[in-house]
Length: 298
Image 1: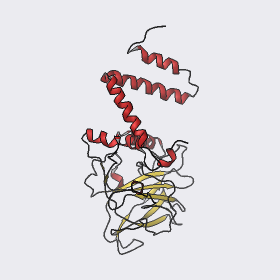
Image 2 (image 1 turned 90 degrees about the horizontal axis):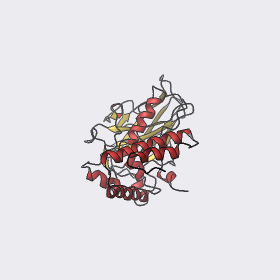
Image 3 (image 1 turned 180 degrees about the horizontal axis):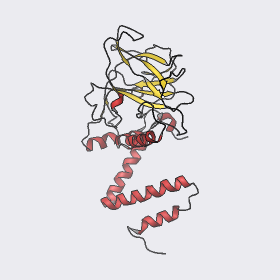
Image 4 (image 1 turned 180 degrees about the vertical axis):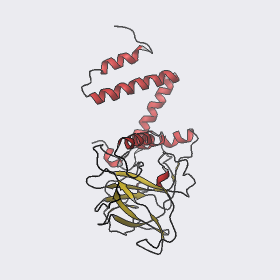
């Protein structure tokens, strides 16, 4: 038996894990150990700093609940979610609408609503109409596509962040025979990520503003096509160029218009956006995120 030191302990750990039967698990864990050990050596991690990190991660876990996912939030603010999303999109079939992050506020059980329905229980602000089409990459309409939408209120809160967490400002719709959809909502407000937990304290310690620009999330799927996770971001938001979680793409930045003669409902501001779905290519889930309730321990 040889005594281990700061250099040789890495190889000893890798040797112990070398017989891992699952090849992907073996690859991922070997790389993780190498990078973790290199990080600790690079910064000369102290015992006090190591324990501070353990406390921080423990608190992140304690903050998770059926309506809050602090670990996804941590991944988002570190840019890891955006990186995973960018890698996955680059490897997927081309031609579809630009993807964005699912985020920590998705709920899997949004109600299926009729075309033109208002997704806000109590709008409390001028209505905004969203409409458009879902097509394939050749521009042909996709009938019966399911479109899940969710957003903050005009005061910048998701339903999961209010006391009763009742379903609000979210819903699901199906496209018609021509791939068309439309629904009513209110213009969302940009917001700070939850700053009352460990991730928020980290953001403040880094001198970061914590804001996401106003946006509306979309999750669109149809048989035979890649599921699309994306969001539309409002150009007028002051944080459009400094999204705390790195989700904005130029192709997803939009501005409502006061009058659109082609809008299916008149008398309100409207926003048209057409989405294109790429053909299914066996690349697995497009979702960089999850319903917080689905990640609770069994």
